[in-house]
Length: 73
Image 1 (tube, one colour):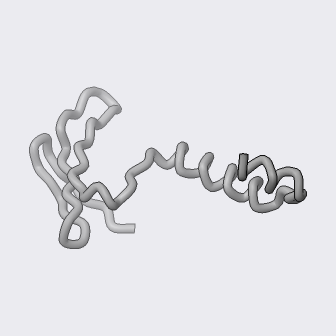
Image 2 (cartoon, helix red, strand yellow; image 1 turned 180 degrees about the vertical axis):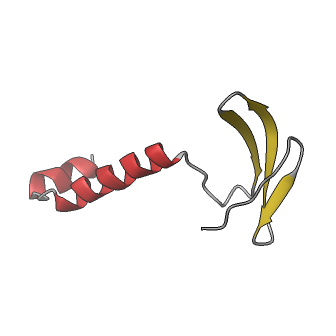
């Protein structure tokens, strides 16, 4: 993991098209701004992990012919 120090108003760039800017530091919280193309999804990690878990559970679910029929209605 790369660890960087940034001050309020300073940024870092990931790849060629993602910019992360430190907007505010208040106590133990940091407000971060992310400028990225709409084609790049950005999630808080805890939400991303929930999405991954839900996708895994959906993949493990047995699909019945009735479920497929309901998708076509």
